[in-house]
Length: 229
Image (cartoon, rainbow, N blue to C red; front, side, top):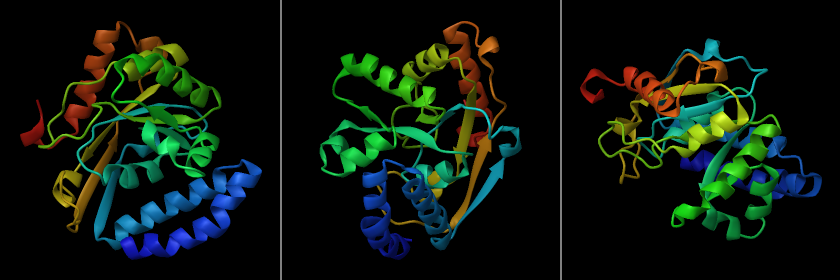
């Protein structure tokens, strides 16, 4: 996997990144990255089993809310999502020259984890991305779980869904905690399951606490029996 990514990097550095920088069109670079992620995971011996993807209408915009159990979650999940998706990334990465410009062109959302008062800025940037017609993918626990069981959910993503009035799609990832556990760099061959649950329409959101509970129940239902609440 690392060899493939190492071979892809010069292509991105010489062609895709300059093209994006000059044209301000992220699609070529985005598709290159998704292909490298998809192929890299499979070269590492990870088989991905997908459930419920047929429930997603590629023409619509969604907020995907997923659990988070491994560093392998993004390269497994993001290539499966129809059309381009924005994600939230550490604010520190926006200080890197060239990369910061590329991330802005891609409408990625900077998050300052050390500043709890920065939530309004994050929400505003996320709204802008969704208003462009992009999906938004959020790991709703805010950090990885050590044991695969669900952590408390952040409320910000639910404010975002209510503000933008777009459907929420809960996603359950299982298996990456065994393939690449937290605090381990090596990847063990195995099977990972990504389950897309039924979209929750804005008209069905109801009270925020009920919505959070509904999303949590959906994600929890897709976990292995020993990890469910």
